[in-house]
Length: 416
Image (cartoon, one colour):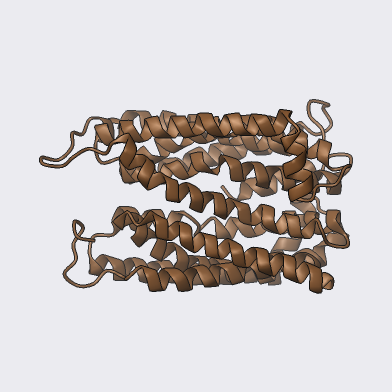
C-alpha cells in the first residue's frame, strides 16, 4: 500500500511543474484524507463487530451514514468559500497554489465512497484470517496505478496535482473492487453466523459508542501530516520544503505502513490471554525494530536515492535534504510499534477513548514541535517534520503505557 505514494509522486514528477504539483498534492491530499478518515477508521469497528450477522449489519449501517456525511463535507470544501478558509488561512496554501489544491479536493469527493467499498470486504477477510487475499488486491491495485502513472502524464487528460489525486482515488477504488470479489465467497463466515447463545448483538448505538473515539483518533492521526505541511508552508522556502517532505514521506510510509494500524488490528484479532500477549509483544517489538533498521539501511545503501532519482524522478538538488529527513523518520516505526501494541489492547477491551486521548496528546506535541522549530530554527527546514513525529509518538506511548495495563496471568479472551 505504501509504495502507492511513490507511484503517485512518479506521476506528479512527470508534469510540467513537478515541484509545484507535489506541493499542491501534499496539501490537498493530506487535508482531504483527514476529513475522509472516519470512514477508513470504521474498518476497526467492522472488524470488532464481525462476530455475527446482526452486529455486522448494524456496523455497516453506521459506516454508510458516516460515509454520506464525509462526502457532503468534502463537497462543501470543494465548492464553497469554506475551502479557501481551510486550505489557505488555516493550512497555509499560497494564492498561486490554491487552484491546484482545489483540483485535488474536487476529485477526492469520491474518497469516502472508495473507503466504504474497501472496509467491509477487508473486515471479512481479516476476520477469516485470509489477509493474503488483501495483499493480492493491493498488488493488482499497484499494477493499475503504475500503468496510469506512466501513461496519463502528457495525454492532456489531467494536469498537475489533479493527476496525483486521480491516481490515488482510482487505485483505491480498484483495490476495493478486488477485495469485494475476493471476500464475497467468504461472506457467510460472518453474515451466516448467529450471535452466541445468551449474547446480545451489537446495536447502532453500540457501534457509534465504539466508533466515535476511533473517529477522533483517526482524525487526529491524519491531521498530523496536514499539521506538518502547515508548518512547512510557513518556512522560508515553503514549496521546496513541502516537496522534500512529500517525497520523503512517500518512501518512509512504505516502512511506517508496515506497523501503523496493522499491528493493533493483529492484537485485536489474536489476543487471547497473557501468554498470547507476550508472543504478540515479542513479535511486535521485533518487527518494529527491524522495520526502523531497514529504513536506515535503505537510505545508507543509496537505495532511496536511486528510487527517488530513477523511479520517482525527483530533482537531484532535493536528494540531500530528502536523505536527512528519511534518516530522522527511521525512529518512527520503532516508536509506533509500542503505541500500536497498547492500542490493540484498548481495542480488544473496548477502551477506544484512551486511544483517542493518546493520539490527541501526540498531535498536540507534533504541532508544538513543528511550529516551534519552524519559527525559532528556520534553518532546520523539512527536518522539523520527522522530529515532530518522533516527539508525538513518544508522548503517546508514555500515556498508553500508563493508562492501559498489559494482560496478566488468569485473564482469558472473555475477561481481557
